[in-house]
View 1: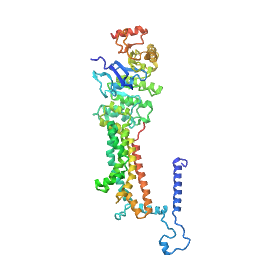
View 2: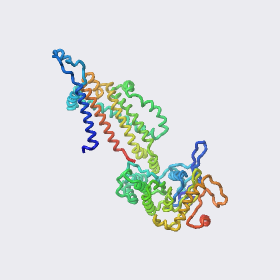
View 3: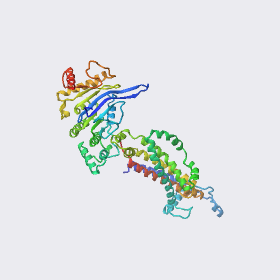
View 4: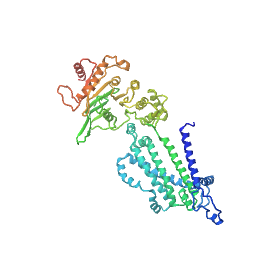
Length: 276
Length: 301
């Protein structure tokens, strides 16, 4: 058991983490006072004249406190981390699924029709590289609702990887399998459902996985702009409060949730995977 | 009114070539297949065998000529013509059973689920794959996959079964076993079969008649060789039959020498009593080559 690669790699990970935390803890200690400090000097921060990144122990204490009561709601500027993450997840998932509803059928159309592929290609090529946040002012003006605008930004950034991967997966289904559908006189709809969809599913899920990763990156920035609720707003709000422990804690939480989103789509991709 | 169950008349396939001209893969392909007959076609790579098969299947279109089945023109793929592809073409995300029920359901959409499964299982048992019905194709050997593919084609009971080098990718031992299974199923179902092969022995074992194609471009079907070895045939027994080596030598001689000599565009030969665009009917088991052709020609006349 001690020889297994999983065990040994886990050990190396833990050692690296321990080194990093010890280094961080030591680097964050204020210098010792060499002379007695007056009460005024103590109030002004003692010998430590500059603000410091809080040490991991401080972040850890805060994490335990926050995670112990993640869903408290004490007014607009003081909500638990669970509530903030739930707002962000709600926006990401809504925008993501709206994008999937549009992108997957559209990707099918583009993938099955060389004409549509050529016709839509210039639009996709121009729209794809636009930073989703660049849409924000236009979205706010047209939609006139910051909540819906944030969802729109997620929608617009999720749509491209799903659209492009679906079109690619559909266009590259093996001709043999399409021929099987043809020799069995399947209708176009049945061919799409019974042959092309399962054949292209792994590629489509890969596109969805890329999309949700990007959506989770973008939501933080979008919420910093629109404000109100969400993990992005929370980070910015704690920065304005000069509470760096909360900033670091929320950075770690953003990473954790992003990882969970990716793991859940990895699980879906195992369901649709097939071996040739 | 055609006299054969399947009639192929003046079939040709041409592609535009780089110089703006035309590349003729094959032309003047004329032959018929009778109901219940097992016909093999042999020729070198590039002579257009697979194209002929794809046209018969309705997956490809001929440049000229027609294919008639039951006096009706073949246009597009149909469940009346089942295809076994060289690379098996199983759907890898479905189990053995589902690969077959998928086809059976397409053939008889109003059958109940139980009836579809029962019918499919019958054919899985026929190819000796009982017990593997819940496995995916990736968990099966090449030979087993091809058996699933054959079971799928037979299960839909098409009027014409098209086999495109079905054993090409299998090792010799597996191939022999599946060939015998194919004969067994063919005996039981009395299917009409058209098969492409590269293997002379395989053709003699399976076929009633073997069509020989010259080399491409401008390939054509030069001869229709009758396999006069009585059925039931067994791999181990037919090699002792008198006609076996006569037929085999004739086929090998064609593939090695004459397929090349006869290649190219047809030049009308006044010495031949019949249109050279139709294959010459040959029975190599009749010893004297001059006599054998005349006799067959007399039979035809």
